[in-house]
Image (tube, rainbow, N blue to C red; front, side):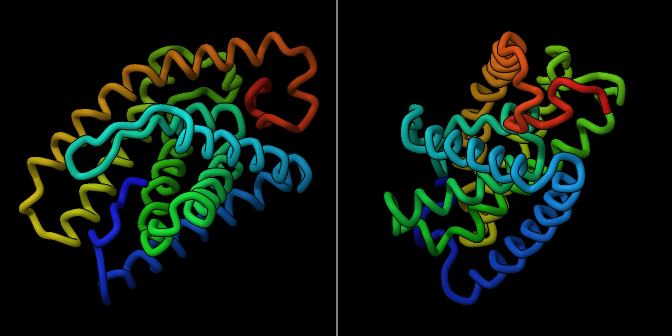
Length: 223
């Protein structure tokens, strides 16, 4: 994943535990709200779908080295618009854990940093969405401009956290590589809004999907 083995070691790893616990706390808060809105079964189903999408993104979609890490097509705003903040966060956390346990055990010591890097920007998306998407607008009806704002929020958050962990682990010597990594993510930001709109348009064609509990209640309904 984004934080490479050996980047942060020793006692410094304790901070990753603290940030991961904080991210878990936000996840529980939003998960409880999701349960009240649509029930445990819907939360579990959406989380499972988000986990599958996360593993697919990590293992199947192309990823390339860029500066201090690799560029991954983790479409955070797509997951949010389809499944909601809590299921997307749970799916990201579980998908990352599954990858570490099954495919890349060497990544497990970095799990706290990587899960923080993926989850905190997800909750930032939720805050931005609440501000820029009117309560009477379903997520399926977002505009390109709104999708771009959500994508930029998520990917900028990922880059910011990677930059923080790199600097925390090795100081400011890698600033040039961090800049290269951030610039590479502009490609993701350019693509993601179109993915959002295409996925939402496809979902709209599936009659009755909104009643299955497999997508967020807000995907097809106003708040």
